[in-house]
Image (cartoon, rainbow, N blue to C red; front, side, top):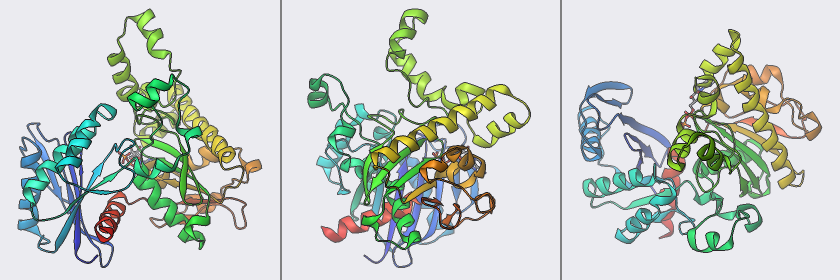
Length: 393
Ligand code: ADP
């Protein structure tokens, strides 16, 4: 497909947008509308920041259109709009051309992702009104994980929950993981469907995924993005009986526990900071809580690497770091791989600390497992999947 794809990632109070030229596969414009609904919303368009009140997503999209009209680039080359949608449930395992029925299906999946899907849907509705003549495609975060086999996606719970209520592991960060695992294979100079990798997407949210021959075979997030690794504000794995215990001893209700595990836990809960740079600063100044938080974070990542080495039957070609933390923090990469030499996983200190924004190898020459840093680009991946969906239609 030639032309340009406008990629929209709509959150509950933000719209992130990127205009991608499909000829060059490069972003030619983009920005972010933040704090929608608050008194002082912020629009940052191609790095230029303006403050104004943006009451809702409809106004947010209008502000974006006005910014394109005023500062460029022109939008007349746009041939499609690609939308990030967090949860596709069991139904959407590939990108899909949006019509009213797809909108309704995304709406029906709101209970699975109450924080995300309603906002994504609002973005779709507003954008379909703003660009009625263009095809709109939904790209789902869960889709890449649709290849996870039943033994890895089934929870050991009453089967009626699984069959009637959609209870199972879905996984998230799929768009990012698909992108970086493909880039990793290219970096190794090997065909994508011959490479086994473990992808660590470490950002505010964090997940680990085992990719066998280019297909996801297990991932650390579950029916919601709360499970698995320690995150900025999310706990990751805890005993499932924790909610019942807190109900008994502290009178907390399930909604309160759910909110606390999502928003007040993780690094923030353990040491009062959710930005990894701040956690290191605290730890370096002697803060014991921050030191412990780093130990917990690193140990959890290593435990998942071990589990996924087993899931891949020991046949691991690459360990791939991505996301804001994974891409930018040599210290986290060192922490996450410490003591794993027997698994063939080692880091070269010089390579690990060398600054670069490019995809690169940070393991020693000739290492059994190539440890890679691959900057993710979810917007480019959404644009490509949008183009592929329309090409196949
Ligand atoms: P999201 O998951 O929201 O997409 P990102 O992937 O952009 O977030 O990751 C954001 C996080 O990356 C920040 O909270 C910060 O902790 C971390 N980060 C960014 N730069 C660095 C750095 N140089 N060192 C350590 N952590 C960093």
